[in-house]
Length: 484
Image (tube, rainbow, N blue to C red; front, side, top):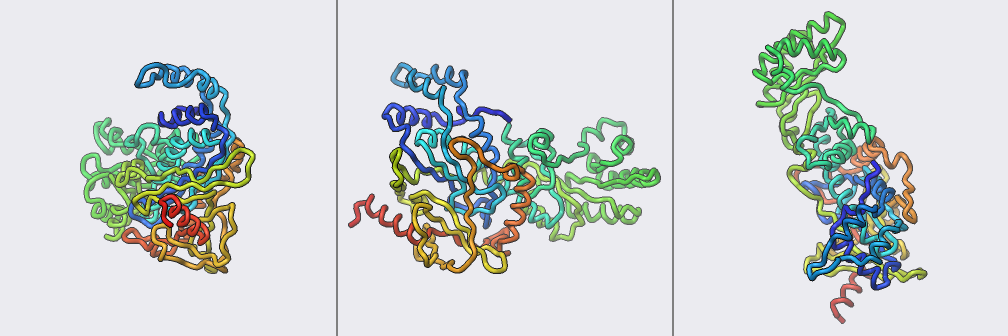
């Protein structure tokens, strides 16, 4: 999309950048780790998404002339320019040299484990923080919501059409993330063009209302779009709307065409779907599908199916594209190690908090995912790539060190993959593809136990610190708190 993201940031990122530059620390190397602390939607998993946009961010990262001109206008609260001319000149010539590693889009991820790792000059790592979190937090949230909705749909296709209710331009990336999470299509035409994802849609109530009567509206639509004819039957009276759709469907059959479906967008959807199926079948239109929409989410869809409603597919908008019941993932981006230029050894850093859940993890971190012999995942180990893994391969819960699990002897893979090296994106084409990420998410969900997939009170998947990392963190906490 060729968008400059340099000013997609919080002001304090740029003031800190000037601080590093002015203190001659801009070249000091740092490692930052992005992760989230709690399961979204009170579920048992999340679907990673947003790294394709992160790659775009890195490729287009420049402080353009208009950006520098704007920063020059900012004044310090105490008077005078906020940024020095020397620093602004530096920004004008800045090109990223960071290394970025991330899980592949569609990967199933869990709290307290790295999703993205950024290493490089500390000033550059800092400048990337806000935009990186904006990309990954939001899209991971939407992809996860989509996965929950599609799981509730039990194999029936779900179309995302929440653009009109989405938060501005975020709706574009929401449409892509919804497909990554499992949706079969989106109504968002621009998303279809940009991301090569399927688009779908037929007509709205206004089409019906613009004609003298409903039957005429249906006949005209069928005439114009005989290969894409789904009729919206609830503009006036659903039962009469179904009768009119049946009339048109039978007329289409006589012409060698087919009424693909009817859509119901209001009322008692389960009851109306059953009535519609009965009427269609009695008329001989058993191949005509029933599409339901109207403020649906995973809980409503499950309830409708539990009542035995014969639904062919779903249209889900507002509550998917806006992550209606949870506005943010809450992912964080924390400094975990630093080193002097030209040195090999990293110095670990962590943030201490009164809350155990907010205690960060020190080191240059990655994740090992272990698998049982049957292909189900057994547990995830967060480890420091600069240290040997303890041969016992024991993981320790990051918020409760009495909870431990041994993973030795199981097959594993490492989750973080190169996204950029020295500021140059190295993603393969398949790692930018929304449809490939969708397949990856479906395969990943299949590795979870049913207890981790249930909507209410899912079983917690084991994620823990490698035993040596746990020990080093404990020692560092004791040192920082002055505990002998």
